[in-house]
Length: 538
Image (cartoon, rainbow, N blue to C red; front, side, top):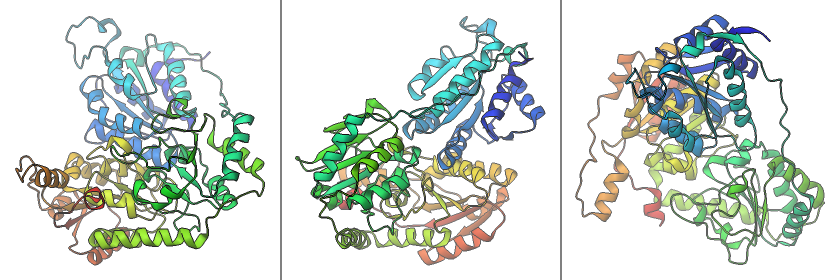
């Protein structure tokens, strides 16, 4: 067994796992670990201006690669600062590893008031992680990190949290490293496959609904093959967009799930990696007689939000392959490609009628960055419309915060995505409220040459709050107005490029210029007050 420090053991495991970047802010309880990273030389270190950003950057890295994103923070205030980002990683089932320092071992649990002391820090993270543990001895570190990595790679990935008292980083001991393990996926039960095939082959209007879990399982090819075999339209939640390209004949359109007429006509629904819940507090409205098959590696999700006829808790790729093998060429589907195309066209036209400016803006963004681009919409009105209308043709190219709805997450998350994909365009779609949460990270972007493009749609207000106060509270406005800087000059003060676009056409031109610039870019877009899509769609 090799003899080394706790920090060296941790770095050895991370390098072995293929970790090539860590986001974090060094401090008293982590400096030994950061020095071990420096001495190893195989991991890039990026220091943002806030711990929350470190976790968001790890999130963006993880969600656009499928690899593990790593953030390192101090205990107490540092750890508390990342909780919103880790909650977002939990909601999006993202493999994010947090490594936290901790006070000295001899001070844990004695309430002495030492620097950054936070009693029962692990209890704070247990509800928003899949695995949370503390090292008691230096030789515990390899096993705890290995356990965390295992949890991030098996079944449903969700964040993991490991904390290390800072005296253990430099302490040397004989380290036992777990051998490289293979974690075989869980196969489906043969009887369940037979039942699923029976339901699908008898259906006259089968439908496939894919969620974020289908992206994690990398089943885009299987879903397309199944759609073509069954003649079944495919509808994806915002988190799953890109699994089936928008020009595929069986792409069933996006739109608000409960507004897509395909749902009302479907008599059998195959759900893959989705919680079966529409946006916000709305429920999916399926035909009462529709047969529902739900496939999810997390058995706790089966039937949670909607009644189901068959639940399959197994690996989605193995399950879909088994269904395809058993299905043969049988299908009783009445769906025709031209019918599905008419639904797509109808939904698009309806959106153009009720939100022409938003649609033109979205078309300008996609027209500039194309299918190679990665887009991260924030909790803002244009972001809501992106969920409905942005054409995504590649998996992991559309990153949102799922049900957590984390205001301010887009810009820092986009920075992490750009670190992972330096050769691809990455755009954060922000409101002026959300961008301010992490605006100081322009400094990080310039310093680290992270050439992300941030678009700020500025209405000088928390737009959604303003609309709610106007509609429901007699225009009694409070806390909704925002004072903004001149964002063009603001960006330039950091050394980034600052631009302003007043129309969708100008936005397209500005984006083209931004893509050619060898620096981070901030584009300020003044917009009138906009209604949320659910307010105009019902």
